[in-house]
Length: 325
Image (cartoon, rainbow, N blue to C red; front, side, top):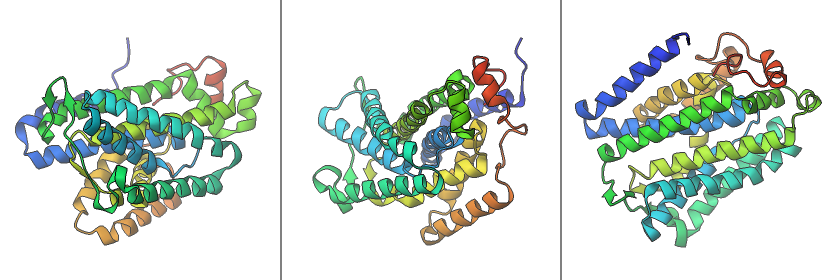
């Protein structure tokens, strides 16, 4: 019989709140909750590449934008069920993420961060200047998403689908973390040489982490199109990358619960600071530096280190009970 943990209690409370919300709050609150769910998926994707694989990548927002524009263009051109457009955005992002993953084979630490940052900036330039496709600096007006004749025209209609997709992505992240594959990622994170000595293909692990992380970002972008009718490239800049990175670092690097808690916390903070756009980056940067210096494990990380258990879990078949999410 499985032990009933505080995490289970928190999950049940969260489910109860999410079920009650549509009947008790206004449209604006539902919009914020939908946005928080998108941030949760974005943070989970960054958790995979940074927290699990230890690859310091700053290209997450680029894949998020690719997911948004791919889903929006498919919706506008062919009007398929939104599941198709979301999966297409996730697949395209995963393919590009796998290609970008080649950088992780040749670069480490700050060099990898700079290279992926450059890719993110290049993609924002594409979003801003490829006017026939993205609308350029004028932005793009998106068609409402559809599902078997149902058109999603407001936050309330999109809400159950956004929450459902978030739940699926959270479940996938937990399964990855508890699997032998997740144990192998953590072994690579600690030492490429030690991981290869245990028979792990470090090159494949790094590229897979980039692809999975990019797919999460692309799917988050597709989710965004379910309740937003307009997108501007300025919202896909480095500020969004810093925001998601702050969510993961402050929540707790290497912790699924930390990524979720950080996404919700800083998603709310970003909404409260909407009228202070000029100082948002300063605030996020100060918070990020403070936590990196004084509390690098974050607020919600596991109390016990999983570093020592990761190699053992790989060699023993990745026992799910040995590695906590």
